[in-house]
Length: 200
Figure 1 (cartoon, rainbow, N blue to C red):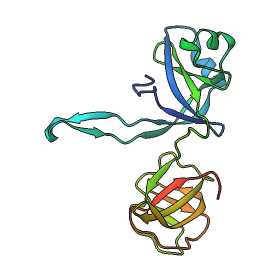
Figure 2: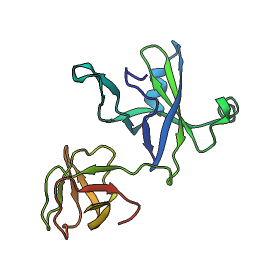
Figure 3: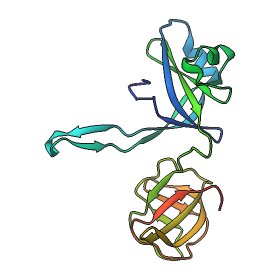
């Protein structure tokens, strides 16, 4: 864990590519690593998975806390031949990365596998309230994972059939809303889907 935050299964977006953290190692050291981190660290976006727990006041029902997103600083490097050679089951390749994060004592190294585009889970949310045609502001349930410049699709329907849809691009992100670059052609009701796509 980095600063008490669970890292395994978190997704990192780095240089327009997505990676999933799958392994970690901690090293105790009293060398001058703060100086190294100050010189070589860079910022990256990370989404931590929601945590499942049981609410026994509700009869033990499984409750899923929402995912959390933050910016972190660390040293990101490609894997070496030794990293690949000694990985368990030979699961890593040159396409994967490792992330060095400072700890109170020493540092931790996290290994993250590149997620292929076809395996990537597209970012999605729902409209929190209805919107009218002509608006450029989308009130949404969550903005986690969305980025400025990302192409998105707004759509709704019934019985598995999409009845209304259009594509646009995000230009601004607020705490609970997305601003798009084109006015909506159609109105959409609460619960309409807002989803990342590959193109506008």
